[in-house]
Length: 181
Image (cartoon, rainbow, N blue to C red):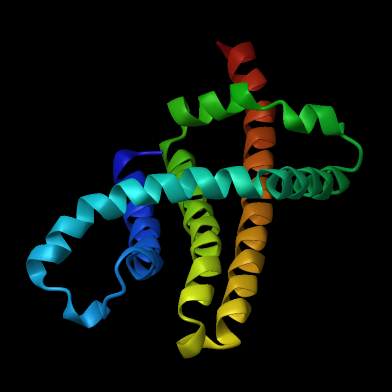
């Protein structure tokens, strides 16, 4: 992931985290924060975004493994028995080849990964936001949280299918390059 992508991901997730952390630490009306405080909050939001990303990764890892298993199964079913499940899981060499030789595809994969991370962080952030802003959000908080979870699951599934199909495409293409060289 390129630095600008991570910068944006962390700032988005960290800024969302600030919404509920400010209520936890020092209840404040967000509209009353002045420009000086806002500028001070930017680096804090970035660091909070890193924490949110790691915590969201840890909490969703078991579910992510299941999503990835199902995505591999989806791709496997579409290959008419050409590959086994274990072959679909082993595509690190192809990912390196994509990074080296296919910048547009690598950029697409990075963009999809960024979208997944923001969705995952949003899901995690909506849990405490639903709690701290219950009076304002009422049933919308849990509804938005469930929606964010479903959005992340969908993004993760389709992104993994795309990654696997890209790797399989590279796998089929690379041996041809080696033979003609």
